[in-house]
Length: 181
Image (cartoon, rainbow, N blue to C red; front, side):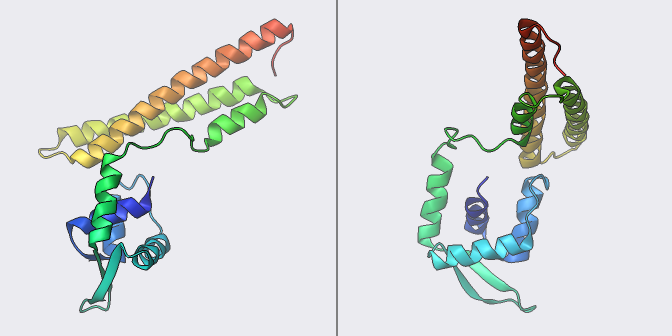
């Protein structure tokens, strides 16, 4: 996820100061990816250094306000048009954990998979519950609803992958003639 581009997109709507950006980002993403206020200001400093935003004074409470520049608008427009690169997958802690576990003698991989499946199913139930609550509102928040959809689909895919892992681990144990611990 690009914090840089997200903050630029928010500033394309209207000038804001750091805390406002943080609140608006978290509101639109349902606080799924909480931002540290330090990260917001570090990103704003870099954006200003790169000529993508500019500070333009302080409000009555002393907050430094930022607005997007023409160069920043161009970057946002390009960001929305260019597909997200899926060529270099992000590090997935669960995939790393399973990959290492299957190579370690004495590790009960099936237990790891079952514990993760349980945790993922709980998360899936929570996301689904939130989705029902959001859908029942008179004016559901489309942005949050789409984020919830993404979380639900990812949890469903993770459960399918865990099932696949368990089948592969069992098949490997069967093929090697010994039980997988």
